[in-house]
Length: 257
Image (cartoon, rainbow, N blue to C red; front, side, top):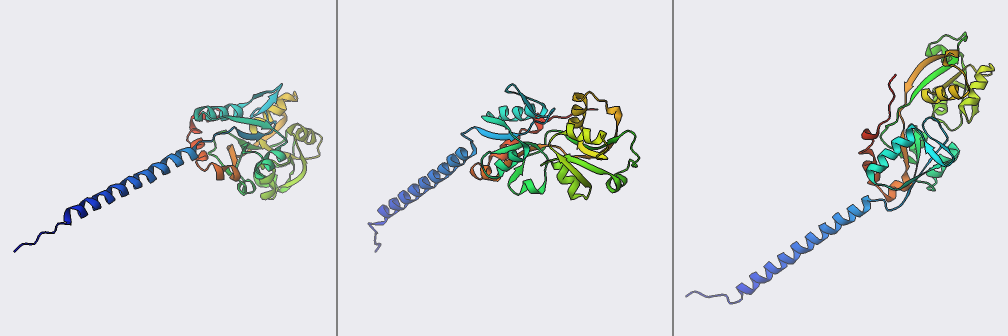
């Protein structure tokens, strides 16, 4: 004799309903995570990026901002469709403001360990070559070891060139805020050399109505520039740096000698 279970069918239906509701709930959770992640990727505000007067890379005159770095940054931000504002400040304040979270980033800047402690460097996409500059009639031998041993340098305050010279045990005896002041010190014999950005030095020489033929040039290193975004900013927008970096190659600035 075969016994039939009269309660089997409803139990199967109940199990199917539980599985359906569970699958639906799982899909809903996944959808919410995707939407939330997409929203976190967008920066719904004007990004503030500080900088300094640093021709020919960036400069401001009559509220008009120009320069190679200004153009390269604009290229990236346009590709991102991102609102931003460049604020010109003394270079020390420009960097400290990002460290304190007052501003979101600063540029154009090369990498060093002090900056790395409070900000993250983007891909580099703006050319920079560092050279040693001495007077044409210098008696110092034009090799790096002799320059390191014998030359006394002037350098810019808060600049990575100054950080590099000191870290590598070069003699820095004067610090000023402008390359033009360093050139005057060099001509007056108060310093023996300047280690500076190639384009920056050439621009300063031209504006001082001097000639590059008055100087000896010893190539040092390539130190390309990017944008430092503050760690405080990136905590709120962790996806932004990867988005920014995706467009730097298309907006690269280089010169060809």
